[in-house]
Length: 254
Image 1 (cartoon, rainbow, N blue to C red):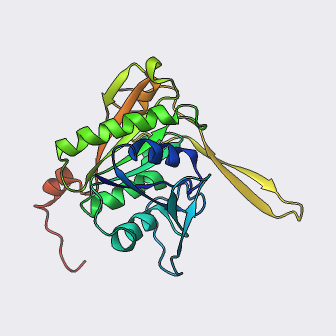
Image 2: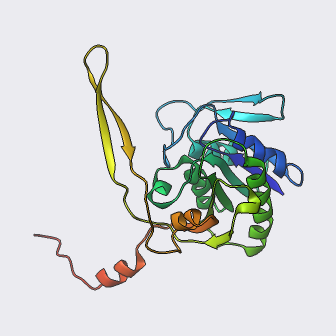
């Protein structure tokens, strides 16, 4: 199977090349990734400047395409120009840091998988809760095994998998849990500072959850030392509310 790999941490990220190493044992792999870190850019795309790419080898490995754009740009350009044939699967990651709950809305890692799903390509986003690369090969091997199963499931067009791992060796993980996306809002804050010229600037931060109300939430699965897998749809329509509102007349004039 032909695989397109991407991420939001840039083409030099160790998690990306862990995926490349493992997936290339069974598949034809093409790496198309941002030329620098693009974390938390969400589903942004580049419209007002040229998009360029450069072929490069990282640490003596096989060549990949480094793109001066966002993760979504990488998938768009890969599908439209850089690959001769459409891939059977797009995998985005491995992101150092969980992409669960409301963070799914900000994540460039998740956006890359979503971009592929919007184009009708099966996709998954892969993240691990903590930084560092001590578990990335084991995560990559699980992702490759999951990818082969996923292709047999034939997910609906426009649905992709968001996969998150606890920061543990595989033998210490308690299992795999199908989870729903949490929607609790973190307590957010800005730290106000002054630069040497007495100009004000801010660092944005937030507090993490200390507990979860339901075990089927993605963050709760991680807290329970499980791998969380969440199917996510690109169609964001609230069909229940649409049905409830459909019978209400709205006049054209006030």
